[in-house]
Length: 320
Image 1 (tube, rainbow, N blue to C red):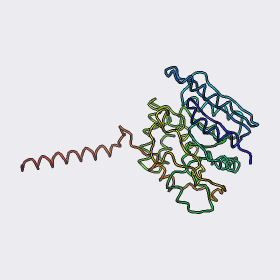
Image 2: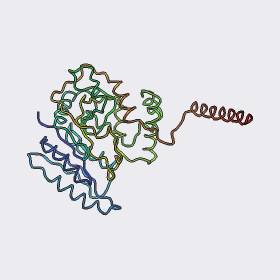
Image 3: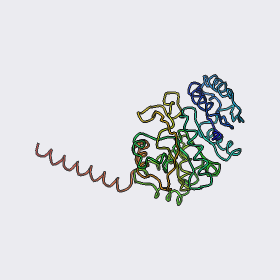
Image 4: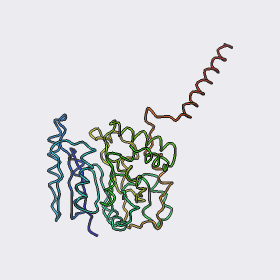
């Protein structure tokens, strides 16, 4: 099977760009979209680093239709990534998307190719993920299946279709619309999940966070879409370091090694793995930011506890 079109997103890190580009070269896609943001005016060293990255991207030495989507000025992560993907999908109906810090296993390209073809006309499936976190890899219920369905469209190496990306909502109109926002919140699996994503999406709207991928997750949820993910990890994130945009601190689960996946067997039934989703949220996505918005019940309980403690301490002090 020929490798599907690849969208490769890079910026100013030549070393990681070279590693991921080498894996793309090995896969030899027939169409390659190279997306790069321009240097930041406030960071003088960006210019030379961006030039070094472009030299790497010029190293296409196989038969390939290359599209260069370069920006001379800095657009920022949110606009550059989303607009680059949109431009690519104006020309192809499916694609694999890799950022410069997402190092794929060679089987990742085959995995995406098989699933992009298998679900090309199934509107229920909107995302193919290459990531499998620790814990999920050991919990295969059926050894004959090498993939499972999830609600989380994780984006460390992924693929999708033009038919799905057309729903991308960078402006988060769904979240700005109360009745739609409430419907999305009601569909979440727990109060903690509702708390976490309310905080994060509100932070996006308020300009406290600049990113593009949480909007894609929201877009998938708004369509009640499914992700198909591997039971073996096919992507290692090599970008956790100080010069990263978002992934500056590393935890043990964030640089999971890849394993081979020689055969791709999709689940027989279109049912998401709730246990895997719960595991992924609790262990890898859940962090209590401050300040956390508490419900009226939480506030009343907290006030009652403080009042009880004050009265108890007051009684104790009388006997001292």
